[in-house]
Image 1 (tube, rainbow, N blue to C red):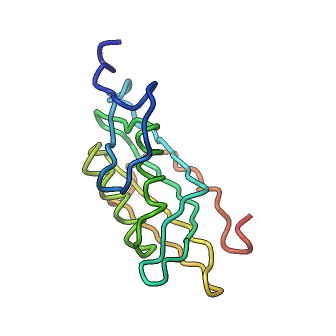
Image 2 (image 1 turned 45 degrees about the vertical axis):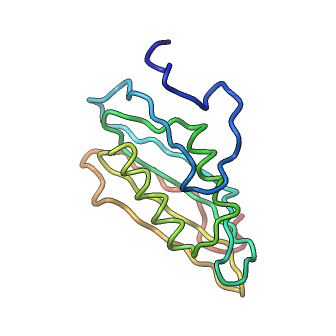
Length: 152
């Protein structure tokens, strides 16, 4: 279809970007721009590297947003998120940075991200960020991620 002709990753071979900065987040038109609804992306196997030790860090990410005119194309989001596996950054930087990049890319009505990080050194670190209060009347389901008790 003509409205998707600009997409360069969906339906085509696409290599994993070497870094989040090199990743391209693509967008598609929102088919229901006047409707209040929630889009949720979950990445239960997110990885990055500790910037001090180089050891891998693992998280379960939950990204919720209320779209305006654009949606993020899911394959490009997957490639972007997976590009963090060689990125050295603290949990807070990864989680908040992903949220801010999505806001810059799709200009949603509202967005929140929860980074549920698995423990290293015996302590999980969970990071939450949102653009403001959720819109009135929005059905906002529970994230489905348990408080830490083995995260499972």
